[in-house]
Image (cartoon, rainbow, N blue to C red; front, top):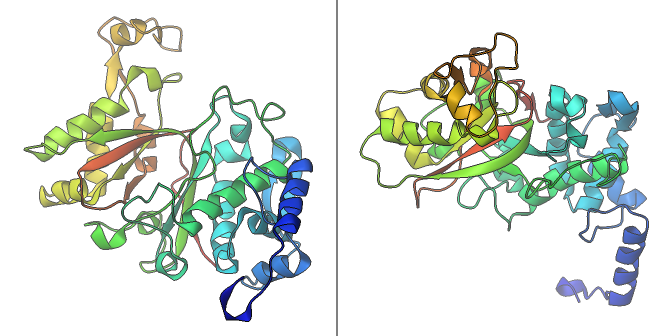
Amino acid sequence: MSGGNAIALDPEVAAGIAEHIYEQGWTDGLPALPATADSVERLLATTSRDPDEVAAQHPQLERNVTVREIAVNAVMAGCLPEYFPVVLAAWDALSAERAARGGGWQSTSGPGPLVIVNGPIRDQIGVNSAGGALGPGFRANATIPRAIGLTVRNSFGIRPRELEQATIGTVGRWQMCIGENEEASPWEPLSVEAGLAPGQSAVSAMLVRTFEVVDNRSFTSHEEVLADLVDTVQRAGALIGRHSPTGVILNPEHARLFAEAGMSKQDVREWIVAHAGRTEAQLQAVGKGLSHLPGGPFAPDHFHPTIADAELAMLPIIVAGSTNAAMSMVFRVLGVWSGTAFPVR
């Protein structure tokens, strides 16, 4: 029974619908909601975009996905209608990413989309930006990236062990959506850095391979925390080829520490890029020497920067989480982030 209107629910019918969706291969392993004409129209009513507009593409597979098809998958993922403009903005953002336009969805590393939400839409639809922002328990954070995953599965046709070739995969591949904690940040939001106006609702996105916690609560200076971040960024095992594109989620406490030391986000980026790297001997010791690349062979003490200078502006720094512990995160970007954000419209 539900509310005061006493709507009778038949659990056998509900279970039958869920099993039908499973049998069709439309779901990601979790139960999905049925997409009816009415439920899809409720999502389409939240945007002025033409339902037949192509909003997602996979050029290599020659597959185009319309706004309506994305709405179908968003309903199945459990999105409320008011989430749909954010889902579309996430696809705008992903469409700007070279890895997502190419073979990233099929990569052996099994990357997932990290969706970052800025602006007032966070509070309007309940996107968590504070404690547990990357964890479970918040419908918008959980269903928006799941809508992307179901679209990749059902509309691109990329499924595990078929077109998708993930060796192990990424934990929480279709669950990574986070709001930037603008209220607790000492700096301008990521979307403003990307060129949008302050106070504008916006989405950035990129494909991510993994996350690593940087737990530093006993620091005595900001440079100690920077060195700890660099130590994680430069881990030799993360290198593929010459460089390893990276991003950082800073806890508000660490962000304030840097700001109080007079550092901007860009200063933090420059410090990380300048200090992160390994020598040829260190890389060779773990089977990842780079002497076979152009410019080699290299002397044992030759220093290889983890992040290329050209990628400096594309190193995303996001302030998120709560202030109950000084824990930040380093994440590995597949490819290089485009440095763009897209308005929610």
